Amino acid sequence: MSHPITPENVTRAELANGIVVLVKENHTNASVTLRGRLRAGAMYETEANAGLAVFTASALQRGTKKFTFQHLNELYDSVGMSFGVGAGTEIASFGGKSLTEDFETLVGIAEQVLREPIFPEKEIERLRGQIVTGLREAEDDTRYVAWRKFQELSFPKGHPYHHPDDGTEATVKKLTRAKLADFHTKYFRPDGAIFVIVGDVDAQHAIDLVAKHFGGWKGKKGIPFGVPDVPPQPRAMRQDIGLEGKIQSDVILGYPGIKRQDPDFYALRTADLIFGQLGLSGRLGEIVRDQMGLCYYVYSSLGAGIGAGSWMIGTGVNPRNVDLAIEAIGDEVRRLRAGGVTQDELSHAQDFLTGSLALRLETNDGVANTLADMELYSLGMDYIVRYADLFRGVTREQILDAVQKYARLEDAVIVTAGPEKE
Image (cartoon, rainbow, N blue to C red; front, side, top):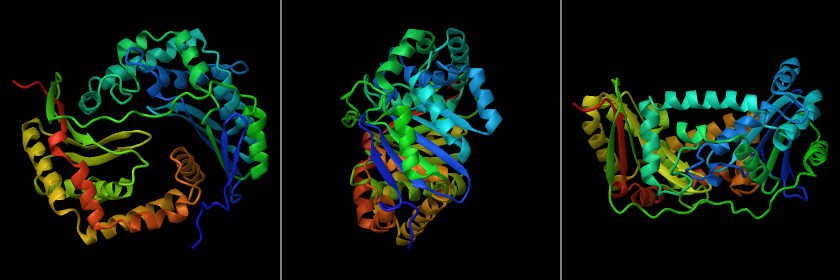
């Protein structure tokens, strides 16, 4: 069987300043994809300046030493190129695409945006207005409100997952241009940076281009990159939030999860797929939505990254059915803990996991993002070669053990957001 990513067909180089460059040649069409990860996520901000990482990443393209925001957009339009930067809790990501002939221009733009932003005051204020508008709209969304409160209750004050990455209206309004520039100077740096290039390009030429534009990039080294563990909650807790004018309630229920590198990851990822994702949202969709008619949608999600996120269940329900839906979901969690999954469910999940990976790796984007994650989580350059065996090797016994270990209703946090109770 041939694999799209193997240690032999990916070139990996490490520059002297700490940047790792991964290149996968693909000469089937004349285009190149660039994807990257930087250690500049919201884990480095405080609750008082929540939203700083996201605001900074969004502001990088608003003007650089060479290009105005308008000039950059005209450049993208004129040659059909794209480039963007964003941030989450753990990392900042960047990415772009170009035709082969414009690839050096793309790398030059990446250098300007990532290394030489000038944070023009007028553009910063315009961007702030857009962020604040988005936050006001989110505050009126039951799903967002429930999720944000769930994070706040699940993780202690001071933990990177406790506060929302995009901040609040109050914190974003206080973020000055100087704070954005300081965050950029300190955290947008080559140490631990990952550059992935996939497409119609010679591997050594691609590495040379990154070295030319980023080899001289200097930045602080040795800044810790990790998320602290969280002790389990001593008891279950629930909070109901009333929002005026709502006709639907959203419920988030969950408990502490695992890190991506945890040995239980493959068993728990498979369990999550069976429980709340496969088909029209797995077992939860089949029973709680289709058979019992208690919700509009329901799903589960396992947040496994550098730190251990939550294993959570989300559902949208008629306000009259909130307690019934929570009870039905609890019953399904207990059934999963008691009996695990069937062999048919396991085989179906394993087929899906291997088949969906093949689809994902059919595009340059899919290959680039997969390579970036392989490097970020230290999965090894032979990860794709081992991938099918990692999931096909998961047994029903391993799933039952993992589920009994992590699906702990006694530690669950439950949040509902919907119409105010009469």
